[in-house]
Image (tube, rainbow, N blue to C red; front, side, top):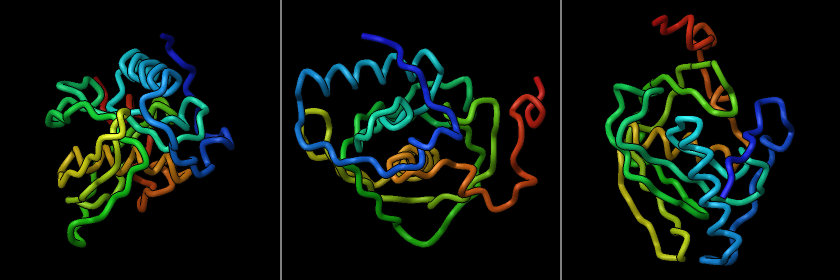
Length: 171
């Protein structure tokens, strides 16, 4: 078990598409997931994608009861999601503030689909199929973007709504 280093925006690895996971419930996969959980918790993250720790794997984790970085957000169930597929449920999008462990100290307003269906597998190969909305949908879209080589600043439409967290949200 280990807290892994998180790659930061500017690292070319974060711009690559991740490879599908082919084997489930292996000792290696389970160790990676445990390391990702510890890394996310140590950094007070809402989610973490394998590419953020330098692994080309279609693997994301997300979820929390309460998160200091997103105090207004509703609870999101802890989920390990492998080889995900996302489908918007309607055309409606909403703007919301996002941050990222790979883009430390910054926040930006990003449009995301309000409601989505996501499918994939857990670490044991069991199928996951959920319809979600709100912050849960936002977190899934954000984390799965990492698997496509997309960081949230690439989705910002109004750069006047992008800046340092401590300036935008002074204590």
